[in-house]
Length: 122
Image (cartoon, rainbow, N blue to C red):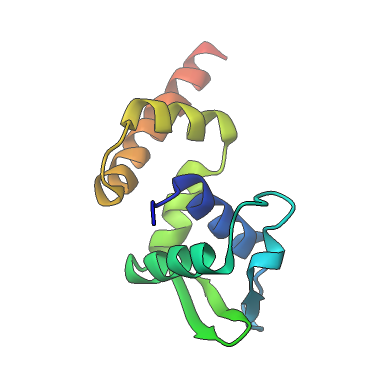
């Protein structure tokens, strides 16, 4: 399986938008069908597992998908830098094909620099 950074971002955005600190969010492939019709449950499972390993999500597998408890501190930090589509696109372009660990670290700096340049030009 090839890691899909856009799917990772989509999962984090979905959890942020639909999650609730008081409830567990059930996450399955049907939640992504409209935006990502080529995503299978297996692909989604693998990406959520990667996000839990990287400690971006607190989640537990279950028979219908995943119980997601929420974003972690690192998940919120990553998403705050990746939320804006323009910044995300430019960051991906500048970061190229770096490993995700490096990409996740570098995107903070890239997003910050892009944000500064937009503010300075604005």
